[in-house]
Amino acid sequence: MKNITLSIVIPVHNEAKNIASLYSALTTHIPEGITVEYVFVDDGSIDESKAILIKLADKNKHIRVVCLSRNFGHQAAIYAGLEHAKGDAVITMDADFQDPPELIPRFVEAWMAGNKVVYGKRIDRSSDNWFKRMSAKTYYRILTASSKVQIPENVGDFRLIDRQVVDCLNNLPRREPFVRGMIAYLGFGQHFIDYERPKRLQGETKYTMRKMFSLALDGLLSFSMLPLKLGLLLGILSVGTGMFFLTYIIWDTMYNDEIYPLYKWLVVVLFMFTGLLFILMWILAEYVSRTYRLNQDKPMYITEKVV
Image (cartoon, rainbow, N blue to C red; front, side, top):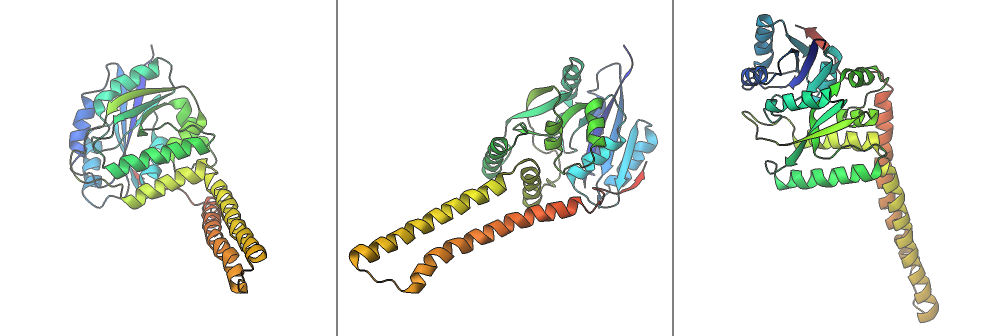
């Protein structure tokens, strides 16, 4: 059997306290007979992360450090790592120890069995607060029901993908900023490995509520037409409600001799349609904004240097 090279892509943003421990843990969980290439992507860190990574790269020829010019975000950093990864298979994982390195042998085993994509699937979200658990469950149900692309639930960016999948992803003319959606879009054979996600080793999560909302919106707008359909449903509901009250006013006027001033007639219709107008304007603005960004031909990230 030919010598197999495995690339491990790790986005890093202000993870100075975790880097050394993570690298040490990774080296102890690599299957025998496999050459490993570590691709760390420094996503505009402002702590000592970049300096620590460069020192590691100076000591180990199998470590590559991709330094982005600023913080472009977690998904952009993953794309940058995939572009520089040269392995026969690529594992993407976070630097906070919530993606257990001990699962790597199981990932490789499932890949060698013929699976092009191997996901780490969380079976226990007790480490998340109740709001995050509820919102994630609701979000994926909505996304699954409204999209033709079946995006797996309870999976993040801890996965192994075959070189063929990596090449397809890198060669796409447009890459949406929602990696898990793009990989699901490509298809290929999938396998899931269940695991309980541990708590972060040190430091605080870099995924703020704003970033989580932005990622969720990227997924929804990239792989679902639900917002437009939702506007249609709200429009039907609004018109239906307005017609109900209008019918009631007409009936009350004709059979009960009730007199309604003109402004009441207008309020029934205008109140509903004003709210509908604002909703549809917001949805339209989201799609126009997205089309505008995609057609600007701006790179998703800019690489400052590669060590």
